[in-house]
Length: 341
Image (tube, rainbow, N blue to C red; front, side, top):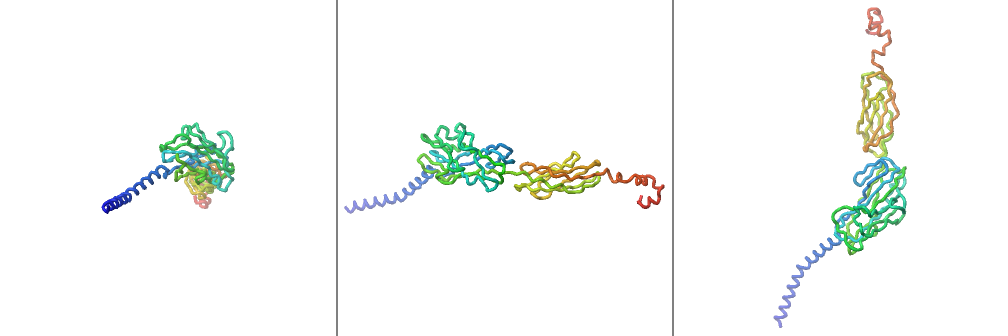
């Protein structure tokens, strides 16, 4: 009996030791599976500017408008929803970031309405990842809040590492808009999120906003300053300056009024003086004007003109009798001595 108890005791010890070594491994394995299954990996919602109705420049997630009163089209793209099972995706626009407090608030173009208005999903696009799935119509959740996404009812959509279209937002940029606007997503599990096939949230979610920057042209340059009466064949330098509302560096273009120009000279810091030189080859009066352009090649209006006069040369300004004295110095010896000829 004692021997049997002893064997049972030994067996218990062995089991305890086995569990002590094996169970942590099982727990770690389950943890890894949980992380892989529930998606502790980066899922990304990203705003991409794709078009505007006027002159603009797009660089990554930033759109620079070189004139106001435009319609701007932004699109949402989604990627990286590992694990490979996805059930629900939803994105909501953060309207609190539509305005920077200067020049009014940006508003969507129409709501509700046709697919060309405001906020919508174009399910016919080839890069719409949820094609064939039930999608959430874009709905208004507030004055400027919009929510849209997709719901999977039947089968899973594997994450193949690509980036896919999820929706479109059209904004009207008013004529008095100024500054920089940030279009972002609403944070939180009830607003912008992804869920896997068993309803678990896929975290973390990374959101990339769109930046709408209003790029105003440089201010009107100051009237060029410099010599207003000079000599043909002599080089003269002229200076101007102007401020750029966005603080960009500027280049200047001087028009010399004789059919020639300086070309773009610079860059110069906003508000700093910029200069260029010119030599006139013919007698006459000329109007010098200057314009500026910023880092995006957006030009200012022309400055007010500076009028300059260039005689032929020093000799041509002599009165006739002075030229006679030079030609016949012996005839007028006293005057010759007076004028040093």
